[in-house]
Length: 364
Image (cartoon, rainbow, N blue to C red):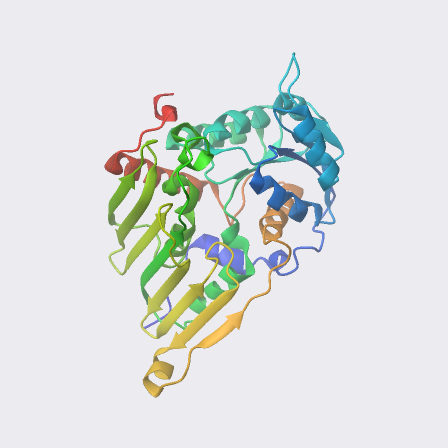
């Protein structure tokens, strides 16, 4: 049986030579802005700074002192907080030296923040989820198209070396025809109504925050599901604490789950007619891949274990991709195209309807 045919975004990722050397410049230097000083920005911004063709121009926050502290620690030239006349975001959007902006605010603010930046003519890389609802994503795509600027959802997994190595193996036929994917992610977190993960208005819960990662693996090797079922446990703050999807692709099946209520192994297993592949540990930025061929299993041979090296914290690859696209005048990334962002949030809308999760954004 032949190898599994892979979707266009996987082929684009595998053929992207610039992702093999993310610290090699791909063109002119771009001026970057950062919206929010949140924890994820603390992790991502050093990887932006590592790009030789990136210049950290400005950071915005509601609080001027917080913005200044972030700028000092990360070598950002300017800090914009809220003033009596304008917000930090508005001040950053008005800075002519800022060409591209990384948005790290909670999900519930993505549509508001990205809309303002697109209208200001800025290119945008926005943390996943791109927005809370499919209607919001459609609006953002329309704005990006109307203003002629680049927009990308920051699903970093697609560009990481571990994911690309796994896809190379699958494209080469080492698993034969893929028939199933099992994936889990999550950890126990005490419920904190003030934390974004437990705030309904911020898009808290498992679905928007975690499920993109296991679904990245099913989408890469099995495509879009023909049908699915969902189950979830909702918490007192009206967010999903546990969510599991069983997916039917006709030619294969998938089972993916995420949780905030228990500690589970972060793991993906892709099974095919000629063998299986397991991702141990970080499924969003894999560093350990385990491969077992059917012949090896029958002969009693141990699986092959490969350790994959990652540059920086692993976000440098998605920032290299965004940088290259902007330098070349592309409106969207072929590795993370707009259609994929819309398709995923449309699935999330349907899942939320099924499990009973409603956001304020649904009524806007």
